[in-house]
Length: 150
Image (cartoon, rainbow, N blue to C red; front, side, top):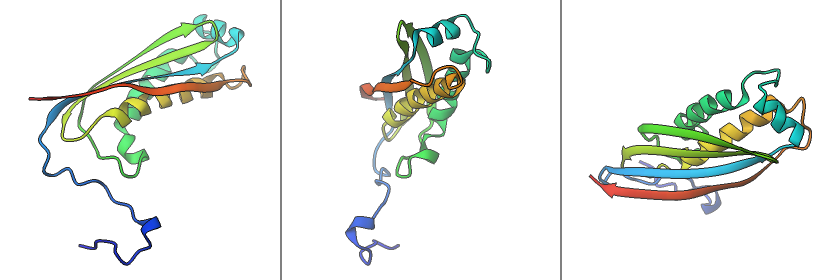
């Protein structure tokens, strides 16, 4: 197997070898916000966005997105996800999204939690872009990452 020594160091890329690690219960929580105009928030709450129920679609998109993380992030391992939970808090100036992802595996699950939030917010953006030209994202962060021996 090639060790890539013939390549310029700036172009080397490889996944971290996790083959000697043991499975652990891993949990990650993330959050993010999409900043919206007040009128957009009202349309979401009254379910009058033409594309449909924004938060219901965003929740499904977040779950789907978390399961596709290793296909989107090149060096991210494929992790067997046990649970994805997504919740929203509608505030005056936008929507907060919270995710919790659980796995029993040999490597972390934080990328899946962050992807879930990001995909949810992107879905809200897509569904509301016809009515709000000033949307922006903020505070996409990992809140917590834990691992526990089984």
